[in-house]
Length: 294
Image (cartoon, rainbow, N blue to C red):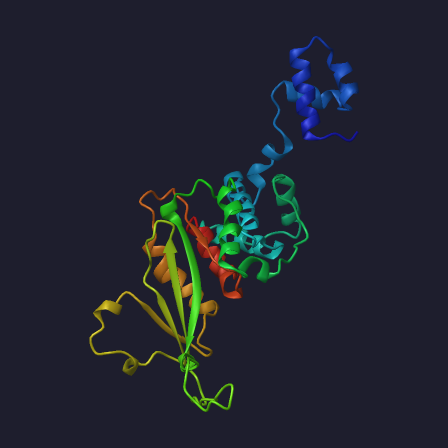
């Protein structure tokens, strides 16, 4: 006989509120008499009875499935591999002796948490999202109305972005030359240094100290003035190309964002809005957010 848990619950409810016999209800819902009898008299569902044998507890799986829904609403739904990695890290964090997952764990996890399911990911052209400021603003409206994030206070909503400056770019302004030509070329240095800045501002207008990323192997002391007290809270670092990479993004999250945006109430969640750059969606970066209620 093929029946669902919902069929069994409906059969039990009908039996309790009506004068029908258990035999007739058993035939109507195609449920074995013994199964219906046991449930009426207080037996547990298979999933509840088997919960002590689950790798993660019910509470942990609920938290993980809600996180999956939130990530999907943000446009960065996790893969099976990422969910398995997070489950293993949860076990490690609680000091479990067993931190490996079985081959069928993901299938059983999805079966136990019916609010999520495997889907095919559809790519969205970034130009449609980032083409204009008004488009960017409009793109956040559905997100902020989503039940997964709408309860987050404005003070805990943060927008993060990167921009860069290239040495010598400012020389392409108006100049004076021969009236016989339409334009005049202007020499510029053969090499240009690129410097990036990471900035983060809350919905209430509070800004965090920026991170400055130089192009190079390391930050040199001679790049700075002798007295730089006003820069003491800034994060200075360097990368080969002068823009953010996975290591810098994680360092910024751990050293700047997490400690400086802690809500007074630890139960309050934080929303960090950023683009889908590869450095922002690594397992390490997302795990830090997951582990800090972001």
